[in-house]
Length: 150
Image (tube, rainbow, N blue to C red; front, top):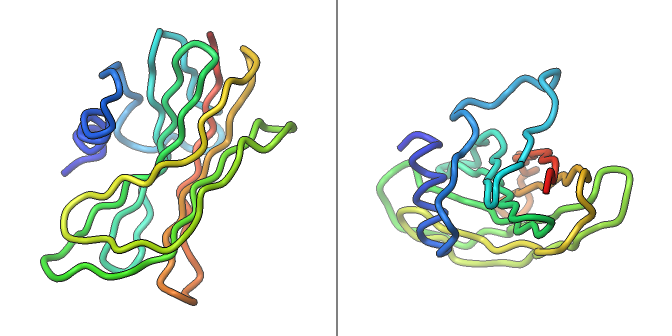
């Protein structure tokens, strides 16, 4: 499943409004952050692989409200297992919006991990991250910057 389809599935599963999503491929760091300007827009970071799972962080912006979540898709057939997760967000050069972390069972298919939600000032850049770790393995982290355009 490509990331655009994964993003649309994530929005549907979270009962979020479907809106235009950024390009399916991650932009180079020099391209700058994604800009969210319509009523509800979702920006997702690059996918990172953790053992048999592909993980991505997404931020949905609606006006000045932001909602952060992680998306984790199992890449091979087989039983699920427990992982440690962490979804966090902050305003760049500003306050933390919070962190959700813990241990959870991730089964076959796609799992959605809720993160912080907040209202931020228009024009702010929100940096969000999602990591999944295998109890001691250093986690690769998906990170995205999204401008809250209001």
